[in-house]
Image 1 (cartoon, rainbow, N blue to C red):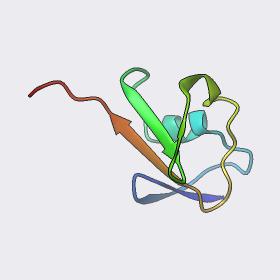
Image 2: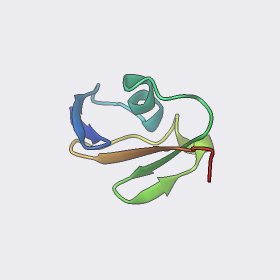
Image 3: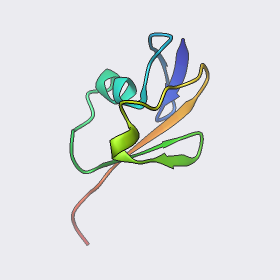
Length: 66
């Protein structure tokens, strides 16, 4: 199925989860927040939150500085 991750189209398995989407873009394991279709997904729920075809996944990485 196709999903959008940070604005780019990606092909994932039909049963893909948020964790699978993060693996597809090699996202870091820490310092990351995820929203699916505008709703924040808790880290504990990443492995069990399935994505629907056409889902918009936003992955945000924390940055230090000021």
